[in-house]
Image (cartoon, rainbow, N blue to C red):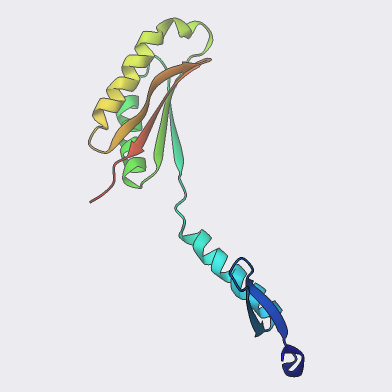
Length: 135
């Protein structure tokens, strides 16, 4: 039948009993399949991670400025990676870095929830905050 119509015999679902075949143009079938996959891929949500960097002795004004940006990022639905970077001998101020990050977490409580508490990795103390779902 496919030869008579000048088309191809395409196996649609090989696992079915009996296997399902259709008489159609194979190139068109591939095109439609790619189009469907692309549409599904575009609907998938992409997780954006924004970073905010602090020093262990960050001033109040700088802290407020960066906090404002953090609020904007969380409102936009992006995850936030806040970290304190210790340069040279400033690693002595680990407690100050942790206090700074916990203060940030407390200030951003209504916009997002802490996904990972402050953790020291090398010369960085990192904390992740995920946005709260809007209702």
